[in-house]
Image (cartoon, rainbow, N blue to C red; front, side, top):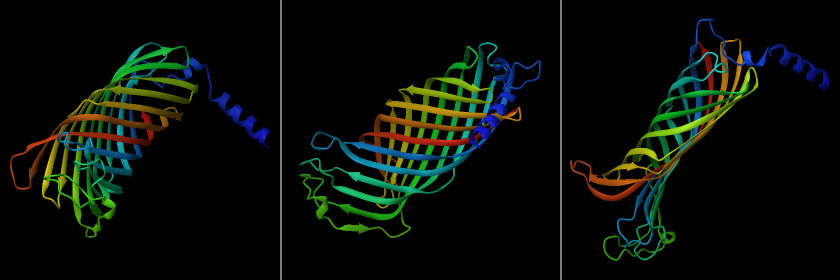
Length: 333
């Protein structure tokens, strides 16, 4: 029975496989050199956003003064992707470009954790709180443009440049906290946090808001390999120090706002796209990627609610680790 099924599969493959060099080019009208692809998509994000506040001076033992972690576990999204590319990419070299919009669906997405190291005596943790995390907004806008270079009959190399805007908005609700007894203002000596009582926040009470806006520019390259005329695998990679982030942190219970303006660091974006074409004009694809940004730094400013002026608050940083799994239906127009 297994042998019969295998023979049927082989016959199907040979049936859909004409001359390989022609088959892997996209369907086209005779006069067209380029085609336009429209792709609705759905998927989910899974990861974490991070805010870091560095120690204001060397009196404090821990280099990290505060850390906030915001879960994105998971957040579902929907979106649209548009591509302009060669109709017959294996005939010659050519230009391509792409544009995509993604919008996350609001809802509970794990927990948020807030840690402080405020001691001048040692680097022990002094404050800790944990809350339910709700993702209010996630929005992605990407544009890329590059050059496609065919190599042999089954392989393409595609250098490109990508510009990306990402918006994240969260808020923490309820939860609990543990705060070591001590004196921040004078000697900065704290008792062990394990000896502090656990304090609970009212259920449903909004405690904290956080927003990140990222703008990144990355050179990259991708390689496309066709296993069959209808089956392909694309691997891509981006790396760049060109990262900007504007962040707003609002501690509602304390009546304090923090604004951070960050830059630099390093961003990495490996990705894999698995595609299957059918009915001449349709392609079903699965996109798996990872966005990782770390070591951004910049000035931080603080103000109390109701006050119009911010004052210097030292140096802050931000980071992001985000896995993306999406399903696309590409329509060749």
